[in-house]
Image 1: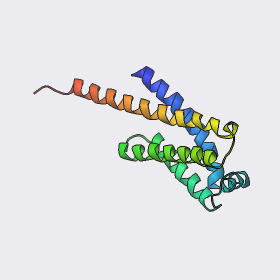
Image 2: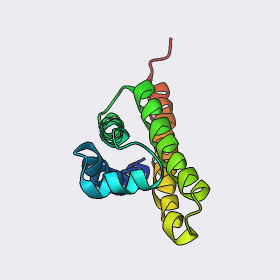
Image 3: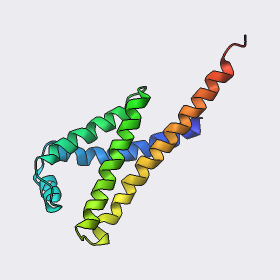
Image 4: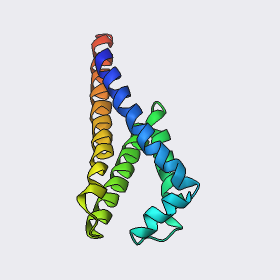
Length: 133
């Protein structure tokens, strides 16, 4: 279990660093973030909304407990990243622009998979230590 926790926290930490930094710039409507999103055809007012939503999702993943909220947070981050990927491809951007979106997608997927592995192991341990009646 300790090995799984270490792997989970490494993957989740890298994911939080990557997505968190970008979401802070989005949340404060940094000119670079607004230019990036408006280039894809979206309105500027969506930038702070997406930034705050990503920050809340990251916080939900980091706070212990609340498994249903974590599920929604992982789903929201996945939708955000897949939407960004789709937007770049449909905008006709070259692969060099959007290929790197697969890194955070894989990090979110890895964090989600290891989160569920830890949950399954925790359930197994509590079942093992439950008193027999």
